[in-house]
Image 1: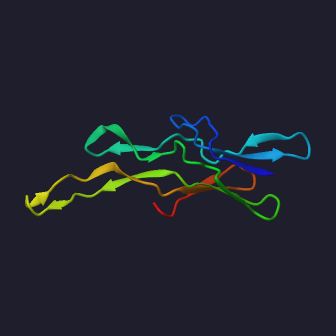
Image 2 (image 1 turned 180 degrees about the vertical axis):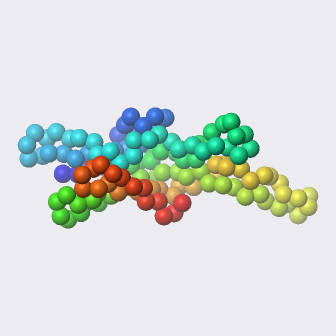
Image 3 (image 1 turned 45 degrees about the vertical axis):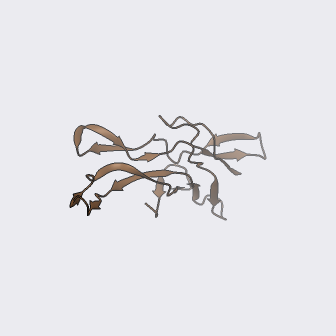
Amino acid sequence: AIVGAPEADTSQVGVYRGGAVYRCDIAADDRCDIIHFDDNGNNHVRNPSVPSSLTQIDNKTLQWFGATVSASSKDGGPIMACAPRYIWFSLSQPRYDPDESRSTKETTVGNRRDPVGTCWVVDKNFNESQEFSPCR
């Protein structure tokens, strides 16, 4: 059986209760093993305004990974699991202020928070996974 645990705490660095998906053998010993989709913590990029620092570009804490799980109808097929509360930090564009005849703020990386959700697909051997996030 494939079981989603949306508030499970995993070993992802800096992520609190991000969620997980397990493969459980209910016929033999009820043992469950985690399926590794994404073992990384929150993602970061170099900040263009401060090249020596990193800027966080997403938030996986309480993302509810495993809230939605879909498995192939045939044994050994791929499995997809989603995190509907995953948050992407997008780029904010400058706004023009007509009263001041100039832009009010510079373009900045990661200052907007967009709850876009994300999904991951893992192959039949649970070796390779790929993110699928069309709303980003």
